[in-house]
Image 1: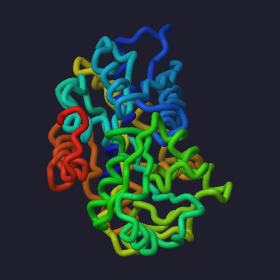
Image 2: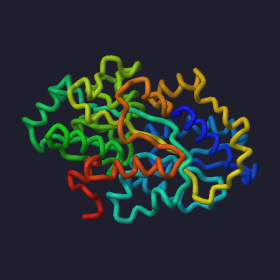
Image 3: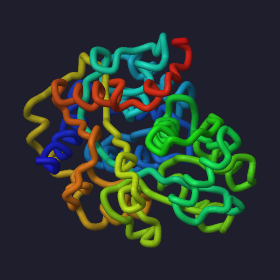
Image 4: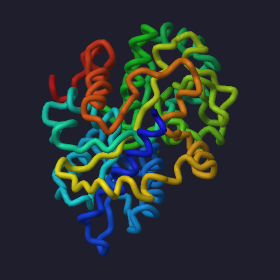
Length: 335
């Protein structure tokens, strides 16, 4: 079922160009700065889509406000199939709640084409932090309340959510330092300007090689092949933090649809092939069905082409029970 949903997603995207000019490129808007996991998966999908659409797919980064700026641009775009967007938990689950004027409705303003990828998160600390395990880090924070910091790619981003979830579940306190993108947040972590960060594995991998940061846990059902020595949050004793992030593909509501186009070659995308799986797995971005290899299925991570199904993760992550930013009372400009 998961694999079929993913195939439908790319088929739906490929159906868009029926009314599209073959001379115009397709814009794929990424609502975050270059270098992060969203940018990585967008460029992989752009290559895949370009082959099936027979058109140039141009990735454009529009970062800011936790992804709200770029997502708002997609919502304002002409419904002609020439502008698509990457949706994430930040843009479609968290931002509509924590920002008073987010600039779009996560359901009404978009056609939800489907989920395209899953990605695990990772907790990193500066190499000088006296903790080599998650339990030691929690104890370290408890002995230094309100004295340590964590960075994220920005307010309302998934890194911010992971950080607040960690604080809430472990009973610790840290000062949140938001940046304009994962690259800046990681650079300052390596330089010792902040003590820790919550980010995607895809963003973290280049920094793990320099020895200036240390990985303590990943949010995935099982250990990652690329980081076999790093335990999951569940293994370390905090299973509630095993929350990966998802990526979806969206278009404007008045999406042109041609039923015949869905049943043609676009229904056989290259993503499931071994070469494509290896390429994306090397960047710690996995097909939506990858998590099913483990019996412990992450919650709050399902995204399908169905509007009814799409509401579930959005409302799940924006409820007081599941959204740690709301639980902590940190509501950005809603104060």
